[in-house]
Image 1 (cartoon, helix red, strand yellow):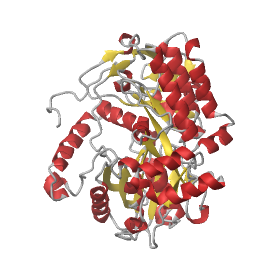
Image 2 (image 1 turned 120 degrees about the horizontal axis):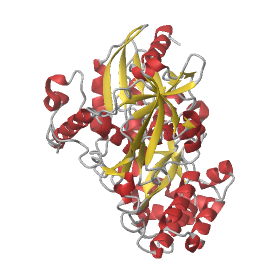
Image 3 (image 1 turned 180 degrees about the vertical axis):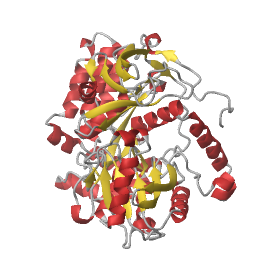
Image 4 (image 1 turned 135 degrees about the vertical axis):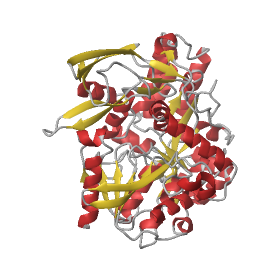
Length: 552
């Protein structure tokens, strides 16, 4: 249901200082339970354990054992939680994160402005305010376009780099992007609260250097994502996403474009009534609006090289409606100009793997080969596969792997070959893909498939994607299997954990290479300009248009 037109989407605001004293744990046993479940999950099920221990030079399961053994040495809840978060972010895998118990899991901290980065003509990074909430007045001098130079007295670039060291991204660019987001938006289900109750920003206003002081705010009214798959449905077991980034995407929409969020809720309510077509659901706007506005938007982009189709894929979180999503994407693509298409997946945190992989066929003259995924060969993973029928294709190789000492099972795709080629090519013009280091997980599958099948050039505002090469499960799915002797138990009061369970590997010329930790390298690197940040990516789209027009 959508809120009334005159109701604020975010109706509750608290000062961060007013919630700091809320308890995190109710007992010592809760802390022990969390540490134990982290250890068990990493040691017995986590698919990337061998890779991460090699790449990072650490023993992750041993770190979790020490956390459990030293639980009484932490003087308070916050210090213990800081140790848990430090361990989980140190894995450098946003798939595999601990989720705090209630009420913290429902809280999001934010500042009422957005700051983005661009590079000046000398190649120096600069940081400007790009968005304020509607009707927000922070003074006539603090408006979109002003440059922020210092954060609490620290130069901006230094502040973001330092914050990035505490982020969980698989590569430097991913951690830097996450830190830039965390400057003004935090999901307290995954993060400790900001260290300060308020911030002091030094900025260059119209009248010269100035300082803005503003408190951190907290909300618990984030509107949930509509398209959640049913538990143990095919989509629920084939998710690949950064859940924290998905929440941040939602929070920013609630703060800065609430009217768009209301429209999404209206259309989502219409989808529940199973409208027959886009025309019946969104009426006369079907030529420029989509029935999946949470995930898609499109238009004709005017560039210096001509007019081209532009398709933005915000995420692949389409719940159990993969078939409807694929059909809608096909409808949109057929509406766009045939002389060239720009697909933009920047900031896409993933979703349902099949939703992304099934779109590749629309641009390929050849059959699509979906990426295979493998489980880690342990005795407990083998027993897990015996409990769930949907893991039957991996059982034989898991049984053999436990005997032979193979690290991973046979690789089998989540998207069937038939599904990946059910429609075939519908767009014959040149295609360019735009991504960044926040293009993650199911989006990594999509970008890797685009490159491995040679579907077009890839432009990146970073040099590689977010490097999330896995299918992620919730801890509860492991517990529900009821494996005797596994040590798995439900966490308390809404606490949870996400874990990477099936790793993906590339196909084509990169066959067998893991995506995790490496990502997909782009063909052309583009640094944001000031005009990009303030004027709808104008220089980035011109660069894409040049590639299309040149036939590169």
